[in-house]
Image 1 (cartoon, rainbow, N blue to C red):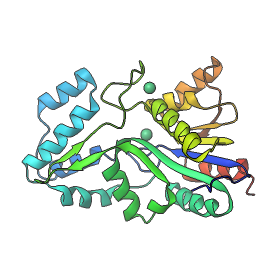
Image 2 (spheres, rainbow, N blue to C red):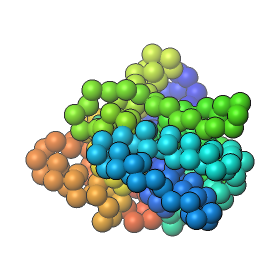
Image 3 (tube, rainbow, N blue to C red):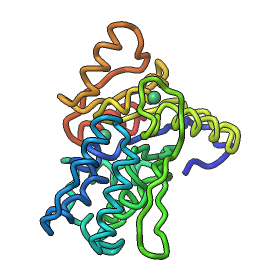
Length: 256
Ligand SMILES: [Mg+2]
Ligand SMILES: [Zn+2]
């Protein structure tokens, strides 16, 4: 965490979680608990999601189904051990943890997944302390053990579905909080992500910032097009592994 009133440069690293830190969709990974017990997702769940793209509705039905089948919170937490990290991403978080000692760097995760899953995966890997804040959907566990997923924000963004967060709103709110509560304006912001739900966040970045898109994932192509059209102000960089992200960070924060 950056100390208040420090006069040297301030950096912010923003990381997506699914398909950036871990492979696949961490929130949906709990589905494997159903598969292992030969329980199929009911067709009405899939149809509703296909029709409305209401992720929050879908994921809450999924947790309800787990609950109905007596798969409880502890089983869910246990299942998260099986998730694999993107190549180099654990090392990237370790490097960030080291860099924070020498540089003013805040590291946050902005994810459309949920806080419970992200916290547990990072804790299990001994990496929770590399991240200052996790901005993701809130979770409550009811007294009966049923897990309920809320929404971090509502929005009126045309690009984002109503049952999902708009990461553009999340970063805007975060930056204005840092300004009002800590008087921090970041000199450079770095973002790494992979998917189309990262676009609104990338479009908030300034010329001096860096939008890093995972190579051959949907965000890369979309941002390439937007760069040509002049819609993306930040420098666009492709990454394949966490090591690529580290290289950019080290170079741009002049640590090497
Ligand atoms: Mg992602
Ligand atoms: Zn949006």
